[in-house]
Amino acid sequence: MKDDSPSNANIGKFQNRFVTADGQKRASVRLTHPETLWFNTGTLCNIECTHCYIDSSPTNDALVYISADEVSSYLDQIEERGWPIREIGFTGGEPFMNPEMIDMARAALERGYEVLILTNAMRPMMRKAMREGLLDLQHKFGGRLTLRISVDHYCADFHDEERGEGSFSKTLEGMKWLSDNGFRMAAAGRSLWGGTEEENRAGFAAFYAEYSFGIDAYDPGQTVLFPEMDESEEVPEITTACWGLLGKSPDEVMCASSRMVVKRKGAASPAVLACTLLPYSAEFEMGPTLRDAEADVHLNHPHCAKFCVLGGASCSA
Image (cartoon, rainbow, N blue to C red; front, side, top):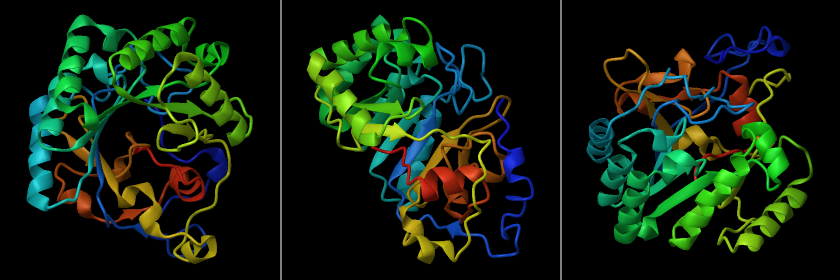
């Protein structure tokens, strides 16, 4: 399991959730406009990436499969709490490893939500039962279902360097099937190999054009390019004064608009986390209910600073 504690470069920082190392008031974020509720379907994955932030693999079941009944209970809570949720997101691991993935997506779609599923589009998605289930969802709810495919790089060699030999061709096969059947697709790439954002987006644009994939490489919502989370780098702590200095509002940070539900191995019930990026950090576990998850989030982690406040990242479409 990945250790979410600060690296040596940040020793002395991120120790007190309320106060920074130099005694200033630490910035916090309120849940002002909940738009996306994420469900981690489990950390099991059919592959093991070199730089997976959640350490997903064929053997890591630290987060176990969440069930359709458990998802439905949180959908009930959304209505009870009056959260203005627009989107239900499913991430993993590989979501299509979870045998109830289709049922979970259907439960959200039947209630009128948009659904975003993050997948590598490989063998788990391409199993007959999953393809049949997806086709049924596409037929009934296609306008509200998006599958965001993990395409780390538009070149096969770089993609396979991260995900294993032959991964690119298998993902491409899944993308072709989705495209041929009219599914709405998005993609998620990485900045691991350098290049400017303009160069990377041009590369993805050429890749999409080659296969007639209807994905806009220049729309950050359709092609998400994630910065790398290098935990060895020193990052500043975010104080309340930083909002004005950066010209940024706490409402722009991901934890102002989203939460994630996980089920830990051995736990009696799921728990709600403040952040999709910190699944193993006890400090960011808020409690078992959405009511618990309405508490403020104190930005007491390097990822809060580098990835969200300074990097401006978002996991949502």
